[in-house]
View 1 (cartoon, rainbow, N blue to C red):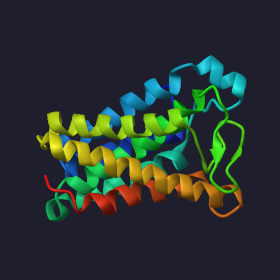
View 2: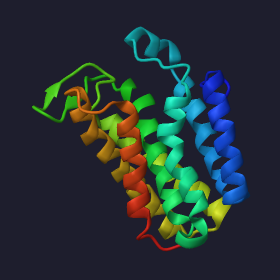
View 3: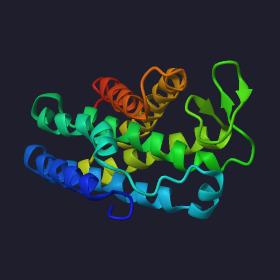
Length: 206
């Protein structure tokens, strides 16, 4: 976590972790730590190649923490009423987005921009690639599998978490189209991603 957050990001992350622990419990915190751990690996992977492409975001601040972590934190508080699935699905969505943005950019071919279906430079919001699509689902499924171990959900539910998390990233990609047009930014897209996962997660069974 320290390798990807600046001072303000670390403070915001620590506060969210404390709130999640005391509102949801250790299971909620462990799943969030699983996201943070795998995010560090995804961010660091092929860092030199990402630097050459000009898309390596090594250090993030509180804005990124808030856009990704605000909703999961609120869902931890609401866990007593909603159950853990919206929280799990929301984390799966932001992990899906993380895998798509950090690993999908390593696709050798240029991604395709949804509006106009033209090739664009790697890292362009609103663009998709075969590798990015695959890694997006893999990231969400990772959280589903982690939720089996941490929360004890069924394998079927874990698979559905993967699907729902992937759909959250789809929503992020669509928001990215508007982002490229000056409507919103990467933080609003991240929040839309987590919100989509949470809303769909409300329909999943434990």
